[in-house]
Length: 304
Ligand code: AHR
Image (cartoon, rainbow, N blue to C red; front, side, top):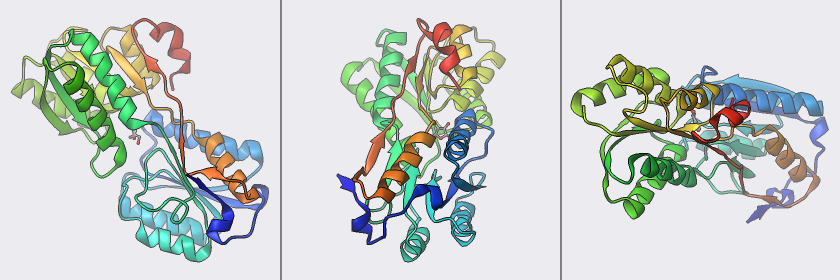
């Protein structure tokens, strides 16, 4: 499916003449968020496009008011990295009234493509979960007890990373049992404290699937604190931060499935094509790598 400016009932525009508003959902303490924001800012600079930004610091009500604020400050096009997938109605209604096209990046907004927003640009999160499962199956030789450190609830990324992982394990390795699941809120501190609880309730745990690197790094701290050695518990994570990939080299993390946050070029291309009246696909999937023990040293420069 594609989307065209005529379907929006809008006049064509030149990206160069427009002010773009960017709404970041989470604090820029996570390298994923730092890289994502930098990618948007660098691309705006490269193209000489005026950009105004806001960061909601993981507060959804704040993000709604941030985006409304961006529109009142003059944003004529929006790029949104949503915190939650639901609850966008007030923003979507206002954007429609003001004829402000929206491109969402990394997480989805639940709405109708080419009505509520132009396109969603992100990873194939189910595939990320499957890839993580493949690494875990290999690490455990197809058998063992595994814990999942879930991401934040209320968004498609957590749901899809979980689904991809569980389905693949069920299909390929019935000897692997998921014995523990709890959210670590996509934070390092959250990953550490949930893993501390995990070690108490399941001291014989064989593997940890952390749905992002920050939680995985928190898990390493907890396991180290409990006297474990590198490799005692197989950890597989998602994102591709330098710290996580370095942890593969150091033996603490088994593998890292990349989630590529470099959306800037794709997001500005989408707005540009849309403005020219071209057909824009309503979903654009960015490509991701997998970091393993075999390639971690060589691939470290690609991590963020
Ligand atoms: O939505 C993408 C996820 O959000 C990233 O994996 C994670 O690091 C971030 O918090």
